[in-house]
Image (tube, rainbow, N blue to C red; front, side, top):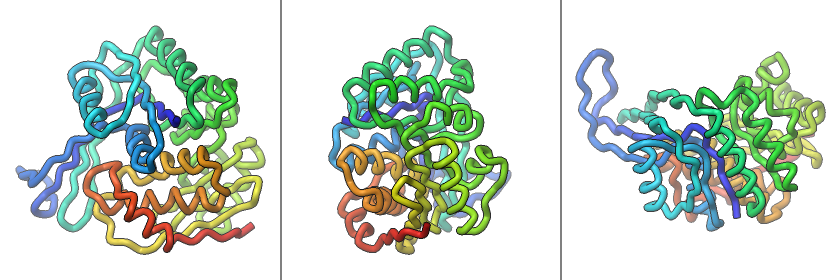
Length: 311
């Protein structure tokens, strides 16, 4: 079983427009798709699509929280959340006919010390049963900058792998807990090392430096359409995905994390873990609904995804 922890859950709304977005005017939405959102829930759907058992946890509250749980039930995602007093947020992704994506992300409402203590207990419970635990996204006010460090420590103390996908101080403050894997982009690498890698050679060197300096087993740097770089004990690898006509890229990074958790739980070789996760992420880009993809499409893309050792 895999568990995903989403502290800043949301109702994700995908608005598809019939014409390009024009500032300062009334825009009619052609279609609207509602999803249970937050990066960890996108990862949870990826886990389920890959055929593994999933339990999602984190914070939910209010009417939006009830809707979120209903949407997860429809997706077949088992969940065990901490209920909070405040309302779960909404996030909107506007997609125009030219493929441009514009996002409006609400902040999470504040949580209390008692609610933070409850989520720590919940993570300890699920870690005892899980093969892999992922921590995804931002955190609401009231959790503190060290929240992910504390939660990763709980999972690592249980002897289980922990994947961390966050940014800024939440990421930097958590490195001391040695999560099994992190998935930074180049801006997040800059936050860790104080310098932003630009070229592929610099990205390869930076990923290896984070791996070696901080003792992170896998450092996976996402490069969008240019693929990814992974530094681990076995070496540094460059993954390349096939070119595709992107429909909606939102949630592809989260899908990659969920698929990585599946690949790790199945004991795949590190090169296969990267290729598998990248193929699922590419498949996510081909659907309008955030965090959803067709496994048969991912399998076809896997055959076109290459991974080579570069260092």
